[in-house]
Length: 378
Image 1: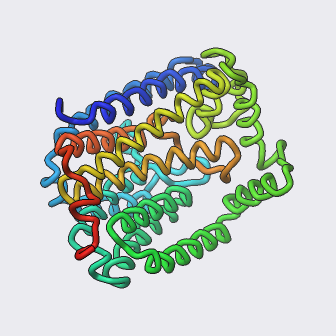
Image 2 (image 1 turned 45 degrees about the vertical axis):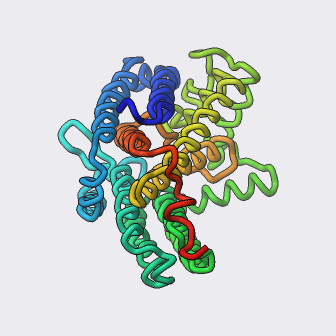
């Protein structure tokens, strides 16, 4: 482990530590109100963090050859869990996204998105899109991604399904697919999103609220725009240096999901522009070091795996931050490493461990643009 990129060790741990502090600050009032215990969410998150750190260490020591050989089985297991959650999952807030395993609730989507990246790295290494053309090279892996996203849509979970498709799209592009070949999957994905919105009125209402806000500046602060309105109030109240840790007001049951989907809003309120900028810088550094590990990877599987994991973490962070600031319709995506949650935190720390493992095998003289990504004869 001493040979890996120290940034890929320090950055996820720093973000996780920030998450522990902000989960406590944003959830204490809710814990008192609902459970008469201000520390309940903190202790649960601390337990999940311990599991996540164990996953990080295990992933950082994992044989990538072993992982590559089992990629199809991992995807099959993930698909089975997604099917199980549709049939026998636990419902909450109008969605069925959890499987109860004893005292622990598992969200299979988080495991599936991790397994999907491993599988697509395995698939695209053996079936390079540039060599196989549109049907076998580009359409085939994206069709598999579409099937997996379809199982997630049945929960329903449009945002996670969309980001799974976006991750597969990015990995296919990184593997050498032609832009002209990627136009058809983009059109199919857009049609799928339109169909999902048409069949799920509450999701359509969120999009309509967002479009109305962007085009007219009008926000239904008493109805569908309540969450966004309170989020913007929190961010705007932070000023340059914030109200101070613990001094935020929107967590007093004004902002729903303050410790999960909108934890950035509380962080911005309590630490101000300075704290929000620091958080953005940490995510930017993590994405940079992850892509750097991908560019220096010693084999195609490791390169695509690092690229896919980095893109996935970056997309989740980008969408969550866009939602909190009113730049995207409201979704249920957590902020990686920072938001309260079990399955997502464990999956993201495992992904960070794999990135660290890949960086430990890299050599400074190895770069994809010189070895595998250049076209033959170019």
